[in-house]
Image 1: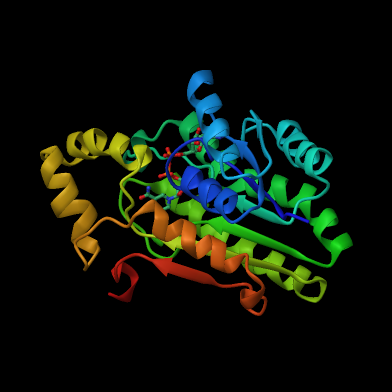
Image 2: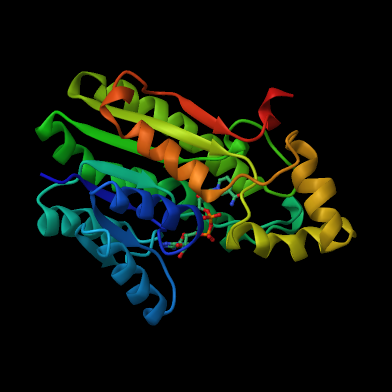
Length: 257
Ligand code: NAD
């Protein structure tokens, strides 16, 4: 029977690449995330072309009841949930003293608390099967900080702790829990912060790319979404069954410094 993967925030960027990789591997995919209806319909059609089951749920990752319904709907549609990828995330770049309170709350909700809610709903299903894979898309910012990203860095450090805790709780149930920590990947999330970072630091957008983002990435290249997706696919494999409670960095050497 085909495996079923739930991927939050899979209408764009890294999540979409992960959903595509799982669909190509023959897994059923439950998509989630925002976007124009026609764009989402096109994604569903494209992924169905790989022969897998594809469904979409519009759960807002700030709303616990909707998040529980996302997992429940995936289980009802495809029979169970084998793989949960917590990927939805947003960013806001601002000094702490100017950081809007509602942005702080929103980032903590989407980038951290939503993973607690998806896990809370999916873990009983995985425990019952004595098999499961939970993959949290953290960030290099789960390991090190940068200025002006207080909420994001706090949430990403938080998800590292949640990953380890869940791994310990699930170690004897055939369920692994790991984080992936990408460096800079050129997705809409990163493209959107270029003008803000330029404004906050008083530099040009080109300088943001070369002097701020890639400054810390020794390879001087953005990571591709496909690299992150391939790592997620590996962590979901049988061969990765003893890898749990840890993270894989895909950051071009950033956190080696
Ligand atoms: P993106 O903006 O391309 O995609 C984000 C996805 O999350 C979209 O599908 C969006 O609709 C969805 N989303 C946002 N708010 C949501 C909400 N309230 N409810 C449901 N879905 C919501 O961003 P991306 O760069 O692909 O980022 C994906 C993940 O990877 C994030 O957790 C991000 O922190 C992490 N990450 C990104 C980078 C990078 O450089 N791009 C680096 C490290 C980690």
